[in-house]
Image (cartoon, rainbow, N blue to C red; front, side, top):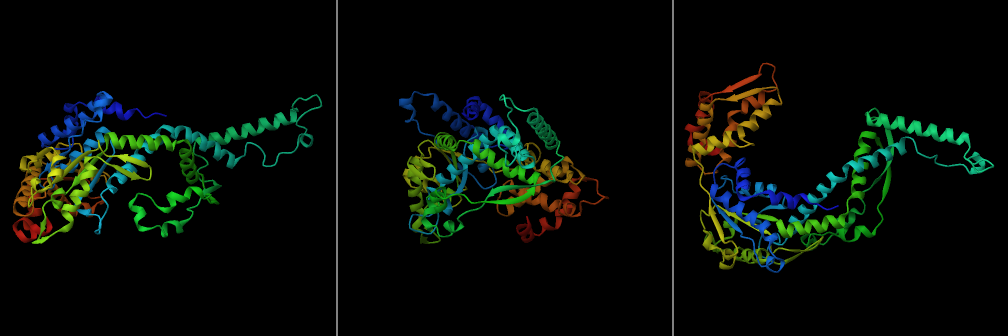
Length: 470
């Protein structure tokens, strides 16, 4: 069962269209959107090049430079979603040089491959679910009313065959009766009338738990465990369990879907997609730049960069699904670079990130747009949350402007955390409402600029309190 949707989607996305899609969720940062759109389209262009030159075309890895909360992560995440590409976000600061405490850098690719396998399995599941449901229905019918008796009598005992070799009318009637009964049960199952009836099914037990307990520590870093290696050699234990049909249906559906999924094809496609369209977002890369930390030399910082280098340059990483080549994975790094700067990275790593884009800090106008324009705007989120309690909330334009001004002011006075400041302010602004509902007396709320000022006045005026709360 080939999976064609991925290539088709990339084929349809021009750089201009990619930017239009990103505009639905991210305000401003036009330069960054443009560069990532070109990088994504170049991956499709590379696939159209003659094979002898294709492997020579390397991805244009990108460094996004800017303070927190301006959209760096969201740009990378939305880009991966548009391309239906395997995507993983990791913090560079959690890795350390080999020999020190911390994760192995190659585990990034193993985790990315795991995500890709899960993604392809989900695609297969959607394709085979209808067929699997048909199989589940037959299995449930067999549990409720077997198609054939458990112990069939012999032909002589049942009179199944007459002297001249024909099927006896008695058995034809029996078969017809059984068929009518199964059809009736099938109808009842389809109408949901038997959901509460109990059946006994055979379920797989979590076998061999001791294999995981005694797995060597290092083998997990290779993306494997003892159960993966030897579990397939040992027979799966099953046990009889009684449950309602509505619960049994889900258990049986999982088993039937698994039977219809060709894992060899899933793994092959997952590895191909990682190698050709995988995206790694390497956050906080500025934390591993430079060689000094509080006056003391940090032995692991440059070591981490040197460990990351071969993965970005292109190497083969061993995963539990097979070898994965990293040559054409797109790496998008980001960092605030308040203390260090991109030139503090080792020269070899700098050379592997040829595109650098500086993202702008957000101002009051940006905050107003962030609150209202994106498809996942914060005002829309809060409105939808309160709607679940049958409460209608509206914000006046003045209220939205006031929230944006307060966010800008607090970001200037305290730490600049970008658009994340809006979430803090909104939570404090609507704290009492979110606590009180559901309340029959509260059916609609209109938030004005005056409400915003009064609710947040004390916090804004007390600078220490503002830093603590907002």
